[in-house]
Each structure stands twice: as C-alpha cells, then as structure tokens.
Image (cartoon, rainbow over all chains, first blue to last red; front, side, top):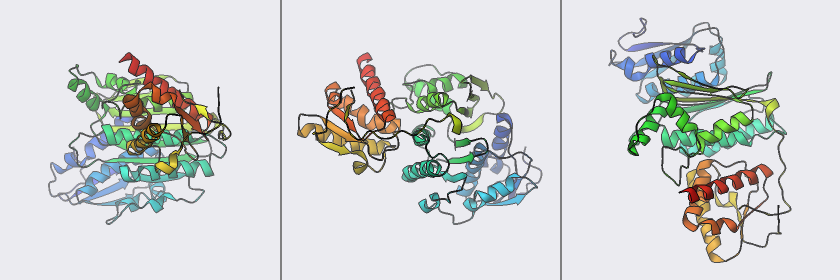
Length: 316
Length: 105
C-alpha cells in the first residue's frame, strides 16, 4: 500500500536505517518506482523524509541510492527532509543529497578526499570509472587509516563485486544498470564497512537462467547462492568467467576474519567473524537485486609486504 | 624456490595496461604476452612494479586465455619480477588451477 501522505503527483518515502533484511527489503519493495507509479502515473516528485534513531550503514546508503536512481532516471525530482533522525546529518556529511540535485554529474576529481575522511564516495558502478574508483578507495584508506597494513584485498574484492554486477547482475537486454558502492571506516573499533548494491535480477534468477540454458533444473534461491559461491561456478562461459569472483571474496573474507552478508531475492547469506555461515530465507519480501556487505577489521589484517626486487621467480 | 637473474624480455604490466582489474586490460596483457612469447624462444618476465592486486576477470582474460591458446608450454616460460610474495602465491595458485581444470576437461 502506498504511503497515505502521497498525492497524485508526489510520493513520500519514509526512510530509516532498518535493522533487519525483511524490514529493509519491505521498504525498498514498497517504494520502487514501478510499484509507486502504478497508482500514480502522473508522479513528478518524491519527498524523502529521513527518520529513525539508528545509524545508517553503507548498505542502507547503497540500497537507498539504487531506489532513488530509478526515480532520477525517470525524470522525477527528489527532495529530502529531516524527520528528526540522526541519519540526516550523516547523509549531508557524505554528500548524499548533492547526488540527486538536477544536473549532477560524476567527476573523478571527487575521488580525491581529505586525508581524514572516513567515508568514501558514493559511486554509481560503471565500467568507465571502475579502475579510478577502486584504486582511489584503496589509496585513500591505505595511506590514511591502514598504514603498514596489507590492504590489497580491498582492490581485489571491489573489482570482483563490480565485475559481477557488470557481467551477471542484469539481463542482457537491460538498458539501465543501477548499482552503487559506498565505504565507511569507523576508527574507534577499526572496522571498514563496504557495500555494493544493484537492482538487477538477483543471484537466484541469474544462476537459474544459466542452469536452464545448460539443460539443468532450476534450484531454490538458497541453493543458487551456494552455487554462486563455489569455485568454478559462473553464469558465463570460459575463458572470461571461470567462477573465481564470489568464491574469491567469500573465502578471502573468512581468511581475514571479516564478515560478509549477501542479500538477494529470497535468500540472505552471512559469514560471521568466527567463520560460521548462515543461509536464511526471505519468503515474503524478496530483496531487490543483490546487496553485498563486507566488514573488515583493522586488527585482523596482515602487515604490508615489501616487494622482492632482486630476483625473478618461475610461475609454473 | 629456484631463481635466476632476468635476461629475458620484460613486460612491465602497468606500462601495458592502465589497471589489473578488468577483462579489457587482461586482454591487452594477453596480446603482449603472446607477442613476447612468439618473438623468441626463451622465458618472458612479468614486472609487477606498483601493481596493487589482480581481479579474477583480469587473470581469466590474460593468463587463463593464454593457457587455452598456447597450453602448458607457455606457462613454463613465464617468470615474475618486482612482486610481493602474496602476488606470486596468488598467480601460482591461479595458474595451477587453470592447468588442473584443463586436464580435468
């Protein structure tokens, strides 16, 4: 049901940092453009009222960005109001509101942040600026917050997630590919949060599309997520996709004693710091697209290695 | 680990490609590797100066595709210089997996 404060040309989105996958998923589904525009075909403006008393994590930011990008691409204007939330000043601090102003364009110059900036730029995933975003994020955190630590995994994992989004997340004929990334470091407990969200088909649909193309039976959403995490599972053929992407991320995070949560369609997969894995279902509120959230801990990271410069080594 | 001084053609990875994260850049490395392997019969060295890390897409389009086109003989001619130990380990594991997967196929 649409929010009662919506009018014929205006829709009201009440955003807060929802604590559970089901709550967040329900919020996203009830506010997606296609759902809202059904009863409001003349929709021209969206008011986002930021509410709640819990702090926003990167996955809140990236999913809200995907949600709003659908409106922006449809030419619908967006405004924000402070509903007395602690999240509103944070969104202001990270430049979230500027992203939705008319005429906004992304510039790679925005990737150069002040040294003390703990959040790193909200970025719409696109092939053209992928390298610049990844290397800037790595450089920023390695230089200012993780000196002496090996942060090379950050570049690898971001690349795996972005390549997955670009290669697998959307149907081949999709023209609009909505996906966002955002990072935030919390120095008090040495935690680096990373989130990548897309509003694509979701892992289960992508996997089942591939399995059926190979003459195999479809699998449940939970089984599809397990399939996507296995080495050599890939919804594209060789040589460009050999199925290392999500496997690299999930096994690497376990080795670094980090945390991983994948919310996609009717499945939520989580790996906690102890290495324990949990796969749960979201039967009533399928999560739109896929959101991958990672948390890395400063104290668990290895020290940076020095290069071997005085000798060559055989590779095989 | 056996080592030798570098007397072979040296491909400085970041001089060939702008990054080491995409399929497109991996393909550029593949072309350079094939040319360097074809023009002489000895080893070819990959210089990893300033390389932060690799993505699987980049490796699949370069080293994965190289094995598919030229087989194990090409892998035996590759060497690494100016590398971090973790990078050497990652590439060796990747290449061993590629070879093993091909044998299984």
